[in-house]
Length: 269
Picture (cartoon, rainbow, N blue to C red):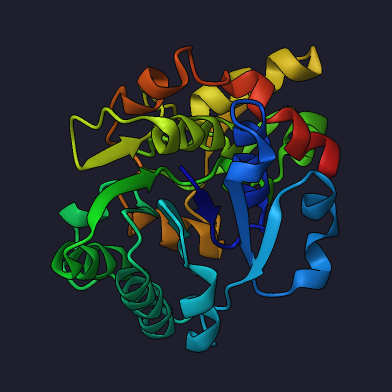
């Protein structure tokens, strides 16, 4: 079995490879990258590096030769129309190369929203390709808390957000990477898709309590209709409340607690 990770120099891709290296020999792993010069660390670990640029179709045909399992990490491009074209290039090349099984990192519960979103359309293209497939629908990365002013909340003792029934199934990239590695290695897929979310949604009140625990002082949550930030418009347009037990089932343990997950973002401010 040979596993290839596309977008391997991105944060999630690197973490998935790190997890896989703890379970299988480096010789079974191939890192698909757009810029090989940025993959020196991966190469030093014994992982084969292949150029696999979503915008260079000919690179994909050669990159996917003799690949058993291919993980298509969704494109980071800002334009969804461009992302869909890129994804379809990968799918077509995988089919031509005879890839046995394709895995795609989409977005949790995106199929319940508009049918023309990039993730649903990519999943449909994969299903239509005839390839064996598994969809890994990731929850919103916990990284979004980095723009909420966590250090400011600690300093002032108040976490201020707009009013609303905000609930979040967000988790860390590391937990998602662990689950993805397990799925890639498993031969037992009882569902064609998994919603990789926290098992219980958390709230801004919970976040304030986590900040209190981390800081050793009380931080309260207060709503203010005057708060304006692009992140809240974005959050209001996606499903961040629905949950499943898929992520914990695959990692075989509880997800990282909120009070531990936020530490990196507080220290980064």
